[in-house]
Length: 564
Image (cartoon, rainbow, N blue to C red; front, side, top):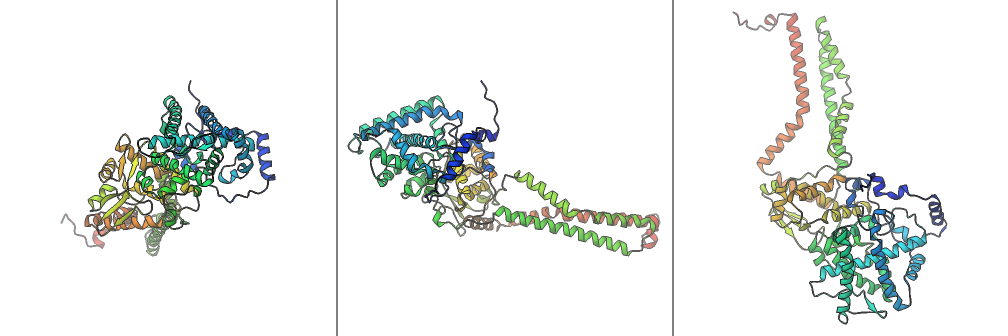
């Protein structure tokens, strides 16, 4: 049976059509009447900007599992509820060793965390405290279990210790004391998840859902569940979470070397799983503060100034022609030429140029697409003498640089697979939504979009070790990168913009490039002036022809008669 086609608004925000008035009134009233939250936390689980969501909704909207309050009511995601309940039962088995039930954990969530939970979510939560506590507790149990499954899937071929997440009799079992017990536990979880993945979609689909910005759960809830489940401290809970988070990042992060070489990131300083990955790939402390004005805005201002200047020049030239004609004592037969020139001067050239610019901007970015970064493609750069090399150590911004003396452009190695686009897009969405973050990672995606135009560029970067392509073809890699920056306006980041200028400066030094630039700047860009000049010349010729039709030009200008 075919499902009816749904609009983008109902697909992404179905709750907008399912608001219960009494429930809404109850939630709003309780939110207003309750005491001010004592939490100092800032919003970290943002709503994806509409410009991004519109271009690729499936990259930001969970397709199989909903975590947290943002998408829990979507009926197409309810198939996972059985696996969530199974995870909650597994937690309950552990709690019973401490004479606790899962509902006791829910009540702890309701009393201590639910009142402050809205502070973490940008979207208003329309759930009552009791329902929200159950939703968060069940989803937290599922996420913990899935992270455990992911850890064992990544580390099963290594001699690594399994995270301490199982216990017998209320005591945590060490990996050394009960490896067999833990392995059996992990295999049991994996078998459950594989049953689901085999019948509905691949395990990668769930991995993609878990990393999406709107599908995040605050990590402090995972930490709290572990402390209650095992009667342990927050520090011990963080130590349990760390290897699981690292294994998850290694599974989905396109910068594999960063996960291996990265220093230990404090779990307590990460708001959620996506934030943890963002910190793993980017050192925010080394970046300059965000720019107030984007590069595109500055380019638009400059373009408008140039357009106004061009229209002013046209009006000035035509006014001079009109003035010259008015000063001449023309016969009656030539008076219409002067009147026609006066009408041409009165044409609203400013408005015409503005309309032309608006149409041009609309054609280039469709009001949502950003202009491609101004940098030659990888193949053009190599032909100009610039070589590429891969960096496999460190993290942004220390892994992108250009050595002008050696003409060497260094970029980090990135692995492209079926998860990469979702990961990249959600990292960009998180960065773009957080006003305190410099848009460095977004600018990196624009840089890659700029140097990749064709499959030949991808092949070149593959040979240099910068791209490891696990997609079906190099053409798919081109589509991935070229689609990234079309949904967000161009950004301005001083560190990368200076590097791009340096690369362009080196590229433009060659005499062939200079000749090409000269033609582009002084011939192609001058077509408006040349058109105007041709029009004036035509007008002068028409005037001359009119004069010769009244007077004998051979006599006036002493032209030789060819018949003589």
